[in-house]
Image (cartoon, rainbow, N blue to C red):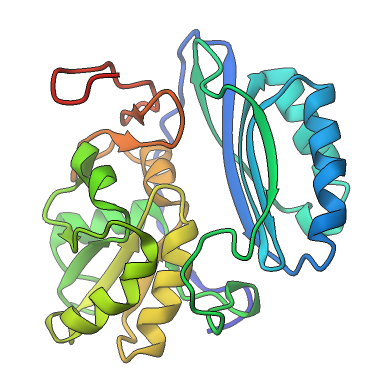
Length: 270
């Protein structure tokens, strides 16, 4: 495992959002040491408020995780200013569009972890598990095995209510109610995963960053994380092998493979 983590590449078509919605929604994260997280909080809050952005930014000593929405010029202006900090210069947000801002307020919080796992030895900033691009993941799922002929399984690291909104066909689902349950769930099911290539995935990649490292540390060497998560898979493929929508943590509730808001149904009222 190296600091940047190998990424298995494959050529692919890119499917762009061409909708007319004018509110830009972004999500991004980075595991990077932030010893000044408390001092950074008011700085980022002031920048967001000055641009009338809404959403949530989580800061911790292990990094940053953020979800923001607003007019495109304002959102991209914030990201450009964020890039002036060398620690965040390579952050590339995932984008989607909506008719309205799906957040009620602007929050910047300092936490113990930007995604809670309660395993302090898991430090993605010190070295990622290998990642697989959406195009390669799709190809492996098409054929049922990886480039070495090893059977491929796909593991959902999200909570049960997220999975119920939509997931990959045939995905392993351990019915987690919170991410801190993942380590115990893995221990209970580890033998079922032996001798397989495992693609771990989540919404945008942050949970499978930690999950993939944990699996590799616990005797599952053929573990990959889906680069950019479900949202990146929607951006860079035609959504094959995925059923339903992708749950998102804002008022949209879920987006489809075109990254458009899923309309409420009787099963999932708004």
